[in-house]
Amino acid sequence: MTEFTKLGLSATTLQAVADTGYTEATPIQASAIPVALAGRDVLGIAQTGTGKTAAFTLPMIDRLGSGRARARMPRALVLAPTRELADQVAENFAKYAKGTRLSWALLIGGVSMGDQVALLNKGVDVLIATPGRLLDLFERGKILLTGVEMMVIDEADRMLDMGFIPDIERIFKLTPPRRQTLFFSATMPPEITRLTTQFLKDPTRIEASRPAMTADTITQYLVRIPTSDPKAKRTALRALIERSEVKNGIVFCNRKSEVDIVAKSLKTHGFDAAPIHGDLDQSLRMKTLADFRSGDLKILVASDVAARGLDIPDVSHVFNYDVSHHADDYVHRIGRTGRAGRKGEAFMIVTPSDDKSLDKVLKLIKMAPEELTLDGIDFAAIKDRPRSDDSRGRGRNRSDRPRPIPKSDNVASMEPIARAAPKADAPADEAPRRSRSRRSTKPETAVETVVAETPETVVEIETAPVKPAAQRRDRNRDQAPRDTRTSESQKDQPLRAASGGFGDDIPAFLRRPVVFQD
Image (cartoon, rainbow, N blue to C red; front, top):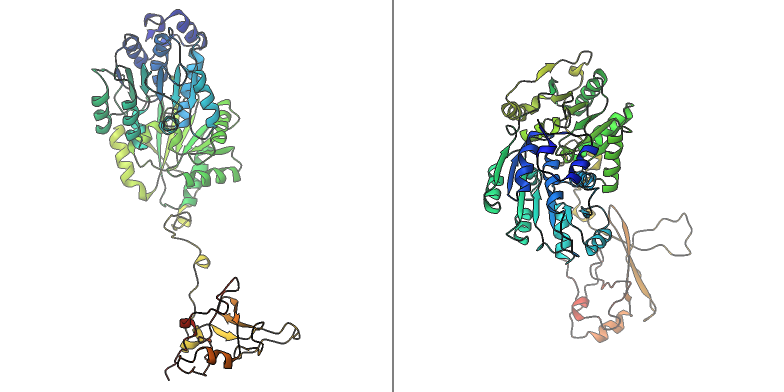
């Protein structure tokens, strides 16, 4: 390995590196740092855990040593796919730049935008951001990217998986064409290759190791269980944790909802576990990671938001509760252990429904993990059942479904039933009786009340003041004689809402009689 002193870094930067305890550079660092110091574009391909963060942070610090930041116009920009990875880059930058006057700002979602705007107004040399928050601040007019001299894209393949490529293309177009670009990725799918061809100028390709190759320091195991039942998988997971000497470990799930369920199950059975995924509050996510790094938390249950780029040096075990849908994710998951020359173990629980995903993983890593058998668990006693959290509603409690209204031979019985409201002074034990709606002989003050009773509710509807029949006939002599028959639903009564009405000016079409056919 190459010593840092031979890479052309300044004395101040070398002292910061020495203070961290590192003396020799990794292959990606030894190859990328001299090229970046020369001002050329870099296309770096290296597996996770090989020191890519220092490979772009150290030359950036040296190149920005001279110059001064202006308000809302950063001189360098680092884009990361997740908040956790961006926060980690910021920690590394603060550690290596402590002997300089360079300033930096972290722009991620889930935290106060006002504090970030205040930093931008003061002027910062380096912006470390996620694409969404960066574009949000740009559209608000809080930041300008015309002064960017260096631009870094970290974990580009993860950007592709998360759908950030259109945002990255837009950000590229907002920066000056005469910038230096450092582009790092663990894999190079066709879409990423197209992006580098479009925006990088004659880059130096540095491939420290074969893409998607797992580290030799990781011992991989495969555990097959004969059922896909979630309860059986959680039982198998607990058995694996109990049989292994777990100093600290990460459990990976495919879905955020599964993360919460597995973490709750582990805590219920006495394990020190906590969840982390994209739906949690940012302050809680950062606190959970801090507890895990410090050793206050033993087991971290995570979605793939924690699989890429997180530098937690001493993780002893990784458990794949679910087989990853994308084979590349498996490589990044188990890359959380076996870092910096340490030994690590990775387990993958496989059910009958995981055959296709497993085949993709095995073809990618080009090896067959050792198979383990869990003794003492009667998986045959656990039957398959639909997932309780299935988004399509399978396995939903039948009592949650709306109950149909029972059919009746009497069609009229399904219609609202007209019923007179009980008198205010009626005895309490007197049940309301079915009758025609009552009319008062008082012309203006009488209010007709109809109670419409359905199988579910009883609704009282206050109607318009009713005048004597003789007065109504005098006013509407040009109309046909009224049908004096009254149905149970009182359809021939002109109703009005209690909150208003037409008063004496009721339109004629509301007074039109309803003729019932026998």
